[in-house]
Length: 240
Ligand SMILES: Nc1ncnc2c1ncn2[C@@H]1O[C@H](COP(=O)(O)OP(=O)(O)OP(=O)(O)O)[C@@H](O)[C@H]1O
Ligand SMILES: [Mg+2]
Image 1 (cartoon, rainbow, N blue to C red):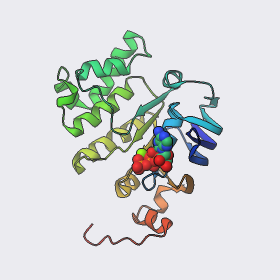
Image 2: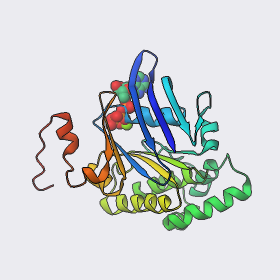
Image 3: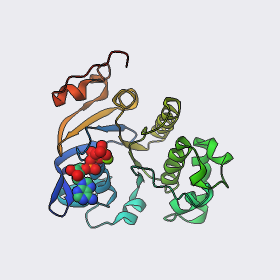
Image 4: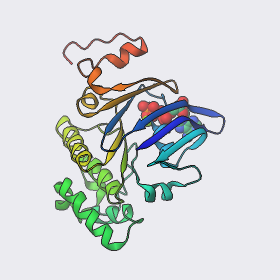
């Protein structure tokens, strides 16, 4: 279980996330939604240890992560698929996966890589190919696989669907659903509310640095316009 309690974080004088509390239980998927600039990426990066926390706490499996840097958090079980994917374009698929497994022994890394490639068979076909030459969907799969080879208990995925075709988006969400079955939990930042609601167990909505909604996904599943409603925006979904 990932516990984020009264967490505020930001950049120097900039408060990006203000007093946010939510949990990601084991084997569950939590969708983090909200408009641009709401603080979604800052939340994810604070959990991964890349953005400074001003107050509150972040704990994984009951262990407080304060004072633990990004590498220590990877070892503790946090996996990160960052916004923009950030794969190493000049390295091969194999080399990207090797980078992702640096916290693990060689034997553990080999096992974890086999599992990740079983989840994304396309990457096996592209194993020795330069990552920069992969399609957008393949790059997202590689970013997810690179995070998985560190054997996370909680995976953080920022903007999973951005720029991807619907079929690939579903393939990536199906992979997360398969991971859930193995007890891996997931915090997914999404712009595509509809697809997020289809897969998530719980939904959090951030707006202007504050958590404005936290509840079961089933409650809002039939209502993909609920974020706009919360924000007081009208939305025309005709033909959507
Ligand atoms: N490196 C930074 N330095 C200063 N302020 C930043 C930095 N990164 C983000 N911010 C600010 O923090 C706030 C939250 O940004 P964040 O990137 O977390 O939002 P987001 O919800 O991920 O947005 P998007 O949907 O556009 O990705 C914004 O006001 C943003 O301008
Ligand atoms: Mg973002």
